[in-house]
Image (tube, rainbow, N blue to C red; front, top):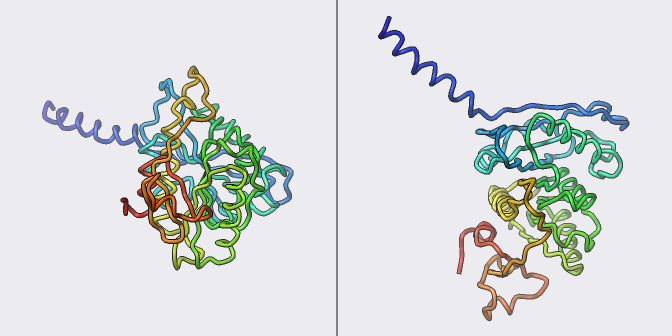
Length: 300
């Protein structure tokens, strides 16, 4: 019996330990008055090693997939978001909206999303005051329109291949934004580029990156850039996750590098090469990690 006990105890530990660190995919339901969204499912993924006793809150990334996406795959961590979320201790949340112009949050979908977050917060220690957003295609419309609807609830947002943007405004100056698109996705490329130019005129420093010869798809390099961007702002504001910390709405950040979107090259700020970039083609970086992801590690 002794040898059986000795074998059984390590086996039980082996079986139980993974359960303690396993990421979980769950869902909540929200009722709305929208015709095709009477009962909306909102999926969310609890990161590995979630600690209910932690004094810190956990960041939330809202992910919007393509138009009328169920949200299950996105919240489940597809396209590499699961590993990224576990690394950073971030909840993934993705709603399964359908039609009814759900990309306009002021109509009904915004209230539905925050109602879902309120439900999740009853069970998990999440931060619902400074959210991250990511979306592609139809979801990219949401990932910029939702932050513009409630900029005070947003820390950073990313839209890839969007066909609809919010009207650039000064309220978004302290909300970090990244816009990407393949240049072979011509209509969305033109819309995206025009939005970035108008936003910059309002003093909103949007990071912009186009991908040569890419149609309406999600290039792996665009995901790498998006994750570097969102991780930087997640880590830059740890006070968002500490209920007792003093809130800081903006932080002074030194410009380290300047990119040339036309030539897809990057230079150190203040160099003659950086100063010679046309103003409309300049992309400014305060983070080396984001700059590396933007230029494909081709640093000066």
